[in-house]
Image (tube, rainbow, N blue to C red; front, side, top):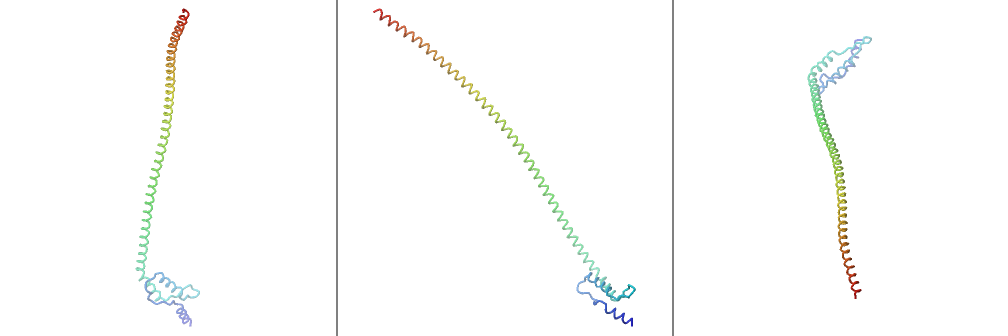
Length: 197
């Protein structure tokens, strides 16, 4: 009676599964089925033991074993593809990093060129300011010299004109003096002539 109940319970708890797997082998599904087969088997009370259908368990293990190499190959293919993708991504990342470093070097060089140009422009501007100040001072000095020379020449010309005018006036004065003497002599002669009549 116990044996009949045991067989009935065992048969009732077996998972419903055919020996042939569905189209396409799914390792995880087959392992899940194997786990379900064990978990759904009859447990012997007070022992912690489980009765499992040996044929069904072995058939399931054979199925997994037979299909494991292709599954492993597929997994290896997936892993290899992942490695290739990761390597390609790493190569792309390295290329991007190299291009970024080259760009940074170019920007750094351009920045150095710009800074050098700014320094040279500052030096040129500073030199031009000093040159302009020097030329301005020289021009002012030359203008002052020309002014002083013009003043001196004007003074000299004025002195010359005064001297010339003085000489002319002196000559005129002399001539006028002589003419006055002639006039006075003539008047005196006229006066004496008129008295003698």
